[in-house]
Amino acid sequence: MSVIRYNIIITLVQREMSVIRYNMVQNTGSARDVCYPVQHDTEHWFSERCLLSCKAAHKLKQSDGEEEEEEEKEEEEEEEEEEKEEEEEEEEEEEEEEEEEEEEEEEEEEEEEEEEGLKTESCDGLNDTSLIKAQC
Image (cartoon, rainbow, N blue to C red; front, side, top):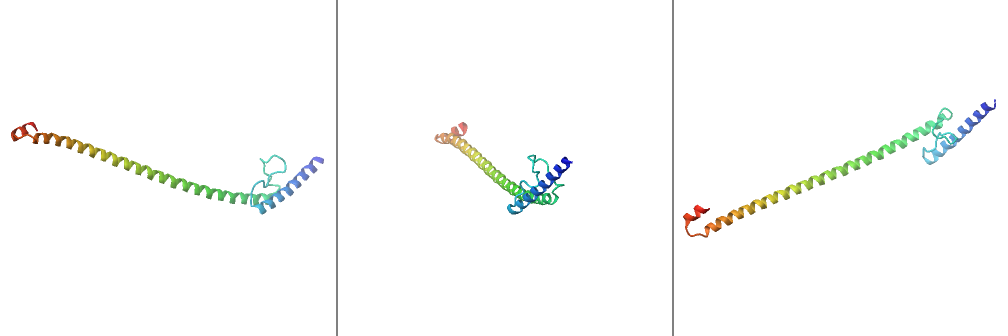
């Protein structure tokens, strides 16, 4: 008989605590520590014993979850924007590198043309046109 009374008292205390916690949640807007047993074991919910409070807590947790999901979406969008910016920067760098390579190639071609021009100029310095044609 004493065991049954003890369980009933614990149940009543747990219900009272859950109502207190429910009211705290209503005042603070936080779903923390709602519908957990009075004992130190916070792993197990006692929703059968405090169904209304647990439903309220579940709704609060869902609303908290929705806010977290919105924050996560915003963070993902920011990350995507950053990735796009990084990709654009990389593309710009690649374009700049390609332009530099093209400029270097053009410079090399100009140098080669100048060297060929020097050869022809040395040939132009000669008076005999037949020798110029033969050497160049």
